[in-house]
Length: 345
Ligand code: NAD
Ligand code: ZN
Image 1 (cartoon, rainbow, N blue to C red):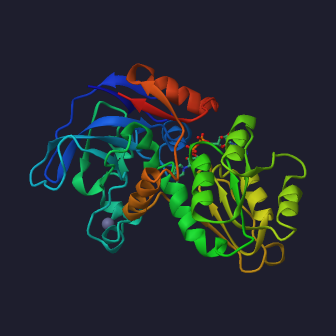
Image 2: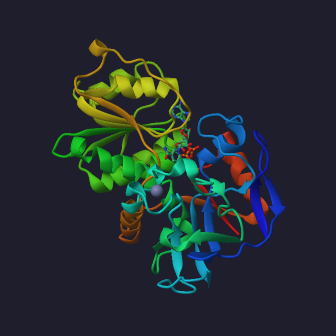
Image 3: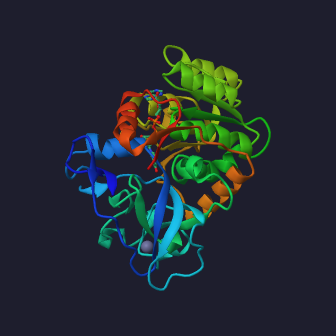
């Protein structure tokens, strides 16, 4: 079968022929419906040097945002229907530690002994005609469209988890949230904030088109450049935002978000660009928190699917055939996408 493979450090992936996988005990074979292209893939194959924090040694099939139809069951598997449509929870932990027991494989206590982090992250992912996944990683989609659902498993799950952790900061009237970086994850963040909270959402990006989309989803947009922080503060009546989410994560965006925070607010850095921030007592709003996050829990993913099925969130997708899969990554790198790129093999 054909697949998009990360073959060598700091090298653009290849569209190549690989063997069709077979499900082992406790696993299922999926016929892939859709595989989303995430900016983290670009970090994996292009930005990270061998041994850098966050790097994962090649070779493996890319794609950690996957959906598909069950085609074959491995030994001992029951409880899923052949032909049924499922979304894939991507992280794979040991399955029995405290973190994995609460469905948070991302923070598996035995991660150091695991040979991979998940599908498309050390273990073969979904940018292929078929994908093997542990049965415990399946989330049923029912009669919802599995192709458009593929980005939910990261582009929606990651902001959902970050927003859920910030809900105490956004509860009550007159609250403000800031979203920086309105690509695959950021657009979903705006929709999730609108659906889960009554907060006024302020959003920004370097791309005019991305800001227009966020505006259509109900955000107030503030372009970058001189006076941006003052403009954000003005919208909040001078107090600053109660929760901020940075889907870029370079030094300047972290600085913008940090300078926009209210006392007792929470700022989550989601983008993995590796920017840093200098903290000091008198320049930091009292009792404010700056944190990071990695993906989400499988319970969160069930909730994200429920929101999708209820029509509360809707990823905007651009579909690519397997023949054009590399074009999806080229456009993602160049910032030329206007929706999440989903490869439909
Ligand atoms: P994307 O390419 O779809 O979107 C990025 C957006 O940020 C684009 O709209 C771009 O115009 C905008 N942007 C870039 N630089 C900017 C700047 N300086 N100021 C304002 N806007 C800027 O990327 P994505 O797939 O949505 O991923 C976003 C980030 O989140 C990436 O760093 C990705 O690796 C990371 N990510 C993290 C997790 C996690 O678990 N923490 C999960 C998935 C993705
Ligand atoms: Zn574990």
